Each structure stands twice: as C-alpha cells, then as structure tokens.
Image (cartoon, rainbow, N blue to C red; front, side, top):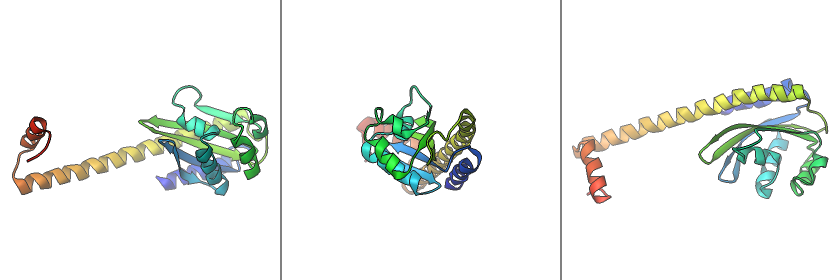
Length: 185
C-alpha cells in the first residue's frame, strides 16, 4: 500500500498546479500517522498539527461531518482560525495548502494533503486534480484495509482449526461453554 500512496503523493507534485509537497496521513485516536510524504515538510507539518491538535490537515482528517476538502490560499491569513499552527507552519515554509478527506471508518480518518511554499498557489483546477488523486488514494487505502482484514480472518480460522484439532472439541461446544460460563474450562 505504501508504494501506491507514495506514487500518488509524487504524482500530486507533478500533476497538481502549484503543489510542491504532498502526503497522506491517518488520524488514529488523535495521533497522526504519516503514511506517505514527498519530503520533510509534510512530516514536519503532520507532527506540528498532532502536537498542537490544530491545523487544516488535522481538521480535515478528524471531521467526518461537514467539509471534505479545504483550500487555503494564504496561511498568513489563517491566524484567526489556527492561531498557533498558522505562524509555525509558515515558519516551516508552508505558503498555501489543500486537503482532501479520504475516509472515515471507526476511529480512523485519513486525508491527502497538498502543500505549496508560495501563497496563492492553488486554483480550482488544482482542487479538481487533487480530488482525482484523492479518489485513487481512498481506493488504495480501502483495498489495503480489506486485504488486512482478510489476512486476519484466515489467520484466525487457522488458529481455531488447530485448537479444535488438538482438543477434539466442536466449535459449537466451545461457543456454548463461553456463553454459559463466560469462560472456557
């Protein structure tokens, strides 16, 4: 999966007008995990937002309702919305940003984030191209999660089969014991 996300992030810097850096993050219970980053600016921004619990990528990733995308023309103009993050991100070299919510599932949320060192770098065409890339990233993440769940199911099935063979107990008998006693004998 990381190879696919790395290619999507790299493609953003080539295909999205104004984009100089890109990455994909996942928010797990208020902790940010950078799944893909074209450079250190992305990682630094992700860490900054996690530390501050403030910022546009962080907000896009944790907001399952409302805005599914954001476009910030000039980070200097956002000091009211993100009073701590905006000046620190500008000091990192961020001029403008865009973010796209990729998915919301259980407590995990993900976003594709695009950065420019220049204010005013992103246009409506940039936003459309970003949405196309975000769609590909969402499909890649979904497929990877499905694959991981299938691997876990196969591993669980194998362990259950081994236990049943060793103890010569039918699965329905194990289930009955758990329901009756709350534990296995």
